[in-house]
Image (cartoon, rainbow, N blue to C red; front, side):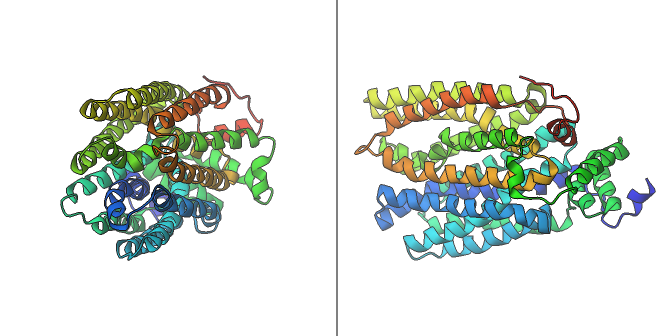
Length: 463
């Protein structure tokens, strides 16, 4: 262990610090997703927004995030995981400052697109960073920590929206994103790169030091040997985007695309972004609608935190399937309630309860598990590209859902009740596809998953 003691980047950073700042990028993701729900309530009145306008300003974040996720792979391979997240934080800071002083809807839309560039890059990089730092026995929990920070960011945004309700200061709501972005930028200065990235650069002493810091002292030589073997295999040929469709990687690309599309078409960001507006439409006062958003945020946080304790015991796939069942039932009932309950008090209360239960199902499954699995299933050589593709598709799906929802749920089009049934039907399809296509990765190291994909060892199917 002499090498570890003398490694230049050995800073004796506790694992709590390592994972806290590593996952803090999720706060940026969550805050910027959630804050628009309160902002919309006020700018709709100020700028007289149509359904199309609401969809445009909300979806602009997703368009930027799609581009940011697309360039994240190249940044990951050239700069490393840590520096890529730092660049993302700087971009978010710039975009947030522009958004906070936007004089018009057009400028606000452009500013949120810039914020999205940073959020997309972060969303494609942070899960990889965490999965490569965590030991295999804790990798699901540590990667799920990213989702805890995402929902924490959403909750913080809902709280800021609620407490600024009396002032109607939507600019201050947007400016709140500066706090996590600055903390993330400062915190990453004291954190190391991942051992897999360091070994790719030939920095074995530093990789050993990081493994000791993040994994403890058990079998560091064995971990290094496994990583070294995978790095050797991955350097035998030049990395190319088309490697993702190689026969041995293609099944995992299909899984990643299903996870990315399914997470968003389950309907979650329609609820995150438009729930207060939805409740105002159903008869709630603005303050009550914003407070209901806080209740949704608390629910998301509590159940995401609980998933951290069960994802490595229950497995990824069972949680996805259980979540789907809950979402189908609650969305189906919500559609019925909206169409059939005429008392405004009962209608609003029942809708709130059903949406809370819907988010319980989402956070149990597709909330935390998607980011965990996308960071696990790709081989090292294609991990950055695979996460990039997954994140691009996820953000494209987010953009579609957030742009289309206010239009189709408008009473002059499909309507809110039938729209809930559409999402319920999509979740039925997702249940079938997840049961059929998605493998279980619980308890297997990243290197074992990759060697199985390469056909070096037999793959044991797990349900």
